[in-house]
Image (cartoon, rainbow, N blue to C red):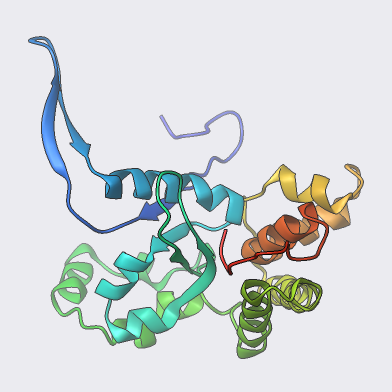
Length: 239
């Protein structure tokens, strides 16, 4: 039967956390059922990155190890959203996202299976700059937004939190306005942002502002406000 028949249309959201490195594969189970399992700090990192996508309000989070494996064309499309350490490690690491919004008018839908296979066989790094779907999914990203976000992130990492909050609020506003202009919608939404911003639960406009705004901006602003909006003494430029 059709998914959602008799109730309402259903959709599926997938979040991805990615790291690169070694892993040991082994079999776990019994004579009735055996599954493969993987042991590695990189597997743990990928799992933590996947969980963190909800905190940052994004579909993708990539580690610095993955970013270094990509072509220059792909790297240019990534956004450095934060610098962190993970539990059990003292190594600071940049984390990245790939900004893309869901659309219902993908050009891919008009291609036959054979055409799609042919496009895959002809893949080159130039696809990041010429593929119609990849370009359409990033229509909400503009130079003005990237300049404001990068300035805010850099001020945050440098410990200049009041300035960082101002720049990130500006970037978040730009993203919200672009999303409205482009007619985007997204279901990635974290109730934590609403509570930290002290918005009324019944304020539909504020909720829409959170949903259509920029998740990384909101996450960094929320983190700084949790600590009083001023960098703690001894701030090292990561958390």
